[in-house]
Amino acid sequence: MSTVVETAPDRGFRYVVREQTPLSAASALLGAGALGVLVVGTIGVLTSFGWTPSQQLAEGITSGAQGAVLLVAAALGLAGVALGAWIYRRLPTKPSREGAVAGVVLGAQALVLVGLYWWFRSGNVDVFARNFFEFAILEEFATHFLRAAGNTIILALSGEAIGIAIGLVLSMFALSSRAVVRAPARLYINFFRGTPLLWQLSFFFFGIALGLRINLSAYQVAILVLGLNAGAYSAEIFRAGIQSIERGQFEAARSLGMGYFKAMRLVILPQAVRRVIPPFTNEFVILIKDTSLVAFLGLTFQQQELMSAGREIFQQTFNATGFVATAAGYLVVTLPMIRVVTWLERRMRSGLTGIGA
Amino acid sequence: MSSDGVLVRLEDVQKWFGDLHVLRDVNLAVHPREVLVVIGPSGSGKSTLLRTINLLEEPTEGRVFFEGLELTDVRCDLNAARTQIGMVFQSFNLFPHKTALGNITLALRNVLGLSKEHARARALELLRQVGLEGKADAYPGHLSGGQQQRVAIARALALRPKLMLFDEVTSALDPELIKEVLDVMRALATEFHMTMVVVTHEMGFAREVGDRVIFMDHGRIVEEGPPGQLFEHPQNERTVKFLGQVL
Image: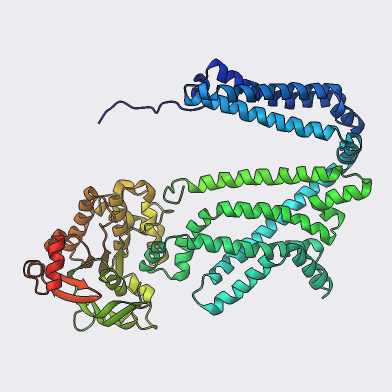
C-alpha cells in the first residue's frame, strides 16, 4: 500500500473557471452581465426616482433610463446566447463548454425577464403602482403586521404539535393487524383528508362552537382544527415512515424480549422519525400557508394572522399593498423554517450512514 | 428445566404460509450444551424452523416448549422467555441509530432493567469477548459486516441466554470476514458450552463444531445424526444428493 497521501484532483468551481477559453469566458460573462445590468440597473433607476410615493415609483418604471437599462440588458443577453450557441461545438473541453452553456442560459433568463418587464411597463403602471405598491401606507401597520406574522407562527406551530401527537397515535392504529382498531383510524384520516380545510374550520367554528354555544374563540377553534387536520396527514407520513423500516429491526427487538410498544418506542420510531423529516417539512410548510384560511372565521384585531392583516389593511385603506406585504410575510416565515428543518435533518443523520444518508 | 432434561421441544409442528406448507410434522428436541446444526437446500424450511423456536414464526399447528414451558400457549409470557433465547440474523439487524455499545445496552436497560453503569460494564465486557472493545462508540454503518455480526452476537449474549439461535449468520459476509464470526461461535460452543441451534451453509463448521446435524428438505426433517455419520454415511438419497452438491 502506498504511504503517499493522495488528494483528489480539484474539479470544483475554480477548476472550471481556469479551464475557460477566451470565447467561452466571454459568452458566460455576457450572460451574467445581462442579468447583472438588469437587476442592478433597475434597482438604481427606481431608487433614484424613489420607491415611494407610488407616483415616483411608476415614473421610475416607465422612465427612459429604465428603458435604456432594459435595452442594454437585452443586447448583452442576446449576445451571450448567440456567442455561446455559436462556439459550443467548437470548444475542446467539458469545462469550457460549461462556460458556453452558462452564457446561453443566463442570457436567456435575462431576455425572458426583460420581455416580461417590458410588457408590464407598457401597461397602466400608474394605476397598478397606486394599488399594489403604495408602500407608505404599510408604515402605520408595521406593528400590527409583525404581530400577525407571530400569530401565523403560533397557529402553525400549535397546529403542528397537536397534529404530531394525533398522527403518532393514529399511525399506530392504522398499522394494527386488527380491523376493529384500523377502521376508526382510517375513518378519521379519510374524513380529514377528504374534506376541505375551509369546510372543517367553518363547521367547527360556526357549527360546533357557535351552534352548540361552546365558549371557544375563532383563534382557539382554528388551532384545534388545524391540529385535527394535520393529524390526519401526519398519520399517513408516520405510517409510511414506520413501514419503511426493515422488518428485521422489529424482529431483532422482539427477539431481545421487547414487547410491541417497547420495540416501537425504542427501535422503530427513532428511525422512522428521522426518515419522515423531509415529508414533514413539506407538510408543515403547507400548514403554515393553510393558516391563511383562518381569516375566513373573522379574528379579532389582536388575533389576526398574516392573511387577515392583509385584508384588514385593504379594508381600512382600500389599497392592496397589504396583500403584497402578506406574500412577503409568508416567505419570511416559511423560508427560514425550511432552512432550520434542513439543518436539523443533517444533524440527525450524522453517523447514520445506514439510513439512506 | 423440564424433567426430561430437554431445553427445547417441538411437537408435531406444522407451518403454512398461505398455501405453502413450509414445516411438516416437525418433532425436535434440543438438549442443554448441545450444538445442533441444521442444513438443507434453500427453501427447505430451516430458517422457519429456527424462527419457530422463539416464536418469531407462530406454528400453524403443534406445540413449542422451552424449559418445559409451552411458548405456543397464549398465556405464556413470550417476552420473558425470549430474553432466555438469543438470536442472530443473516442480515445482522443492528439498530442503526445506536452505537455498538448502545445496541447492546438497549435491552439490558429497557428489558432487564439494569442500571446504566451495570449495563455499560456488561456491554463492554461482551465487546471485549468478541474482540471489539475499541468499537464501542462506532455506529453500525461504520463497521464491517463481520464486525457488525460480532456486535449482534454480543447483543444477544448480553441477556445471558440459555440458548442461542444462529440464522445463516455468515451468508451475507464477504469470504474473508466469515472466519472472524465463526471463531466467535466456535469459542462460544467449546469454551462456554452454550446450547446452540445453527442454520448454516458452512459444512466445515457443522462437521467440526456440531454435536448433531439435521438435514431438512421440503419442510421435513429427513435425516439426523452425528456429523461424522451424516456427512460420511448419509442414509437418505436426498441427503446424499444435497451433500454431493455442496461438499
